[in-house]
Image 1 (tube, one colour):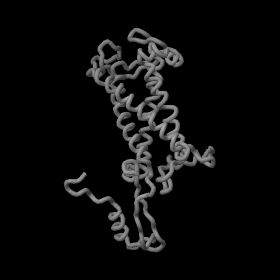
Image 2: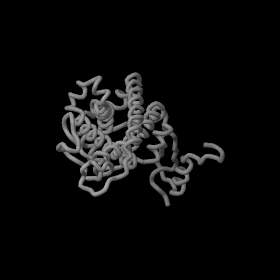
Image 3: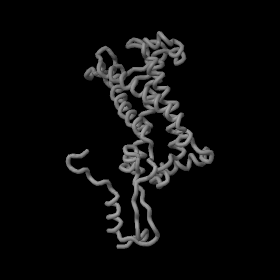
Image 4: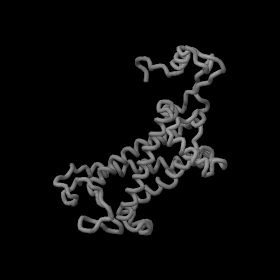
Length: 274
C-alpha cells in the first residue's frame, strides 16, 4: 500500500524547547498544589455545605444557597439522616500549606514572566488576533472538535492566550484574596480588604465560585490537551520537546511510515536507569 504523502520522512524534536524550564517547573508545582487544594477544599465544603452573604452566617441564619449533600458535622442541617466522616482537620492544614506554595510559585512566575517578556511574547494576543472574528473562529474549531494543526503546537491561539491571562491575572489573584479574607488574622490586620468583599461569609461564597471557575478551566484545559495530542503535549511540558514530522513530496509505503514513527519514539530506559 502506498500513501501519497512522502517518499521520505524525518521526525525530530522541536528546537528550541516548546516551554522554558522555569515554565515547566512552575506548571507542575502549581498542578500538584491545585489538585491538593481541590481535594481539601471539597472536604472543607462538605463540613458545612451552606453559603451566606455578609459578615456572619451559621446553622441558624438564612442561606444564600446550599449544596444538597450530606455534611460531615451532625449540627449542620442538610436534610439527610446521616453524616459523612469528618476530615476537616487535616484538610484545612493541607489546604493552607498548598495555598502558600501556590502563592509563592505564582509570585516567582509573574516576576520571571515580566523579566523575560514571557507574557508579552507568549500570552498577549497579537494585534491581528484581537478581533471578534478571530476569537469566534477558534471557538468554532473547538466546538467541531477539530484537531489543532502543527503550528498551534508551537504557539497559543487567541482563546488560549486570553484564557491563560484571565486565570493568571484575574482568577488566581481573586482566589488568593478571597481565601485570605477567611483568615481571622488577615481580617484583623486588613479589615478593608475583607469589607470590600462584603464580609467574611461573602468572601467564602466568592471563594467557592472562583474555585469552581478554576476547576472548569482545568477540565477544559485537559480536554484540549487530549484533543491536540496528549503524549506530545505532555512531553512538551515535561521535557520541553515536541516530536514533529517533516515530509517531502512523493509517496511512502505504509510500513515505511510506521517504521519512521517508531524510530522517532523515545527508546525505553535500560535496566538500572531512570
